[in-house]
Picture (tube, rainbow over the protein chains, first blue to last red):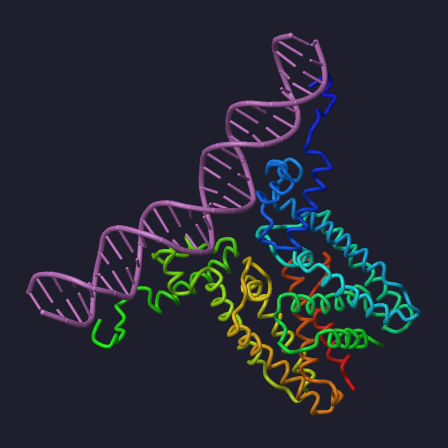
Length: 204
Length: 204
DNA sequence: CGAGTTTTATAACGGTGTCCCGATACGATG
DNA sequence: CATCGTATCGGGACACCGTTATAAAACTCG
């Protein structure tokens, strides 16, 4: 260490480029072969490095998962924010719900990382929780517009309505992804009808 | 072997009593210390047998989980069937939803075994799927009564309504158990209001 | 150019699920 | 009653996991 603790970082190959390569490959493994295929040894071998890299760059497997988790939420939030507003805020809520399902089905393994415990003893960090809250905002905003437009009673908090919608879509999507749905049932139409029923149920 | 290959099985200590002891202990471990504490070695040691017992009695860890899964669904179905009928089928739907949450919160680890992938590469068997369908029936029955009573339009299948209710309660409960809910929010009242909104949204 | 420090890969540790394999103990047979 | 055959069972081996201690390598600085 030079004088006065000036930190002059020595060169490293465990750099940011390797970090993104690890994250990319981890996402690939997760999407193509499922959570059980994502082991540190396999991951390190696939990008021609050692397991130590994961520890120096992330801190361990849970931390790696946390990074993936953040990325997944970021993309998810993007999708939901991209839903165009119409002049009917209640319709917006329904559309956000439909976009939610699209996003989940587009990359099921990521969805499972976000909301299911695919890795034992994995606890999202605070920063990650904040990101998750971001993904929640478009629905809250739509619900607020709906209340302001008079479609819903003024004494209900928009957060409550948004949470109800979120619970519904998350529940149906989870059941769908886990294969818990009764066989021989077309899901898409039921999904939309349930969404509209929920949206209508809150009307003043 | 006596003549004509009559199979006279030799005595075994891997009998049904050991089977239930293993299942009991497995449930205990799951409930008290979580999924990561449920290892075959630990389980076998706790009931004074060997890991082989699990393989001869169940077939492996996934199969053991499948048995637990069945037991969990059995209890869950009991809870839902025990919900008393009132003269208002729509109110019955709401009560079933509330009972669902109670059942899930009573033993969260079991709920996670049922609906979350706590063990990688665990696929419920067909028989188990049938049991899961049983747990679904009380809600379908209530929805059917609601349609017959005229509360809901005749052209909606009771299964659709029941599925929507199931999705809602499952989603909210999952979010609650996974800690994905926005902090500082009283859940119980929101849960019930969302339930009623969903039930009302289907009204003719 | 040598000393020292950072950085990295290798290997070890304790754990897991799974499976083979030899010891065992019982029922049927002579 | 003695013997044999066989089904059964527990211990150990195997491959893999996440994690970490260690020792070699590479770079900076005096």
